[in-house]
Image (tube, rainbow, N blue to C red):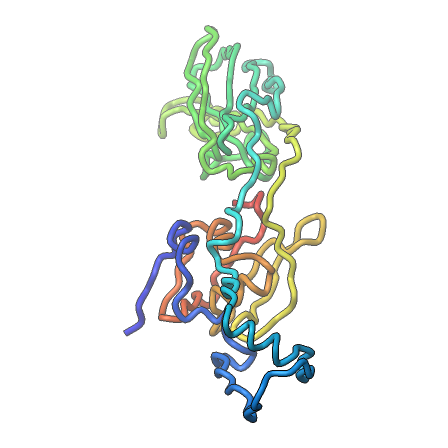
Length: 301
């Protein structure tokens, strides 16, 4: 029976992977220990150089005072993966919303919380419509009059019908560590389903569409995947790249092992798990599930 394991960043950061093929050769086998070279007895040490360039006297001294071997590098020796946070309170975007007929007005700001999360702040909200209004952020643009089947990231009902200012701070859960892909703010009708109102302000009808122009500061990371090409147990495909040409996503192939995939991109297993929270493996060698899409972009977490 296959044993399924959910990889945790903390576990992989502190222990070596059992069976991980980072220690295996190109044929998947562990290297065999080499036998010591045969030697001939010498009655007395001399300064005659050995084939390795050391004299017999040097070797005798070394055997009397053996050196402590240098430990092999491990996952634990690698630095923890990091991405510098955006300082709390940094305003990343702001603007004003006005519906085409002037029925709705309000101001918005997108603010960093300092911990890779963000908040949408709405203020000065006025509406003369006889229905509540809601807001949500989208990757793709919408059109006034469209009907929504999904209300976007940070979906929130601002209230109404009212002409009184309403302020709201809304967490942008699901935005990722870089919210700039959310380029459209949609204001929609939050009327109750089946409420008797004109069709243009019926439930989930788009009332206003506003472009969000983000200004996200450059961020620093110590995780920089580079594709060294397919290798044994890491034969999947890079399916997207960043604007700078770095690998952005990878699709797992049959027999891929998490250690070999990490090695292919020059990062630690700990970093690969950091990029893909909740990634699953199975078996003693920690196979990845075929067809899984792995993120390789620190800003895509």
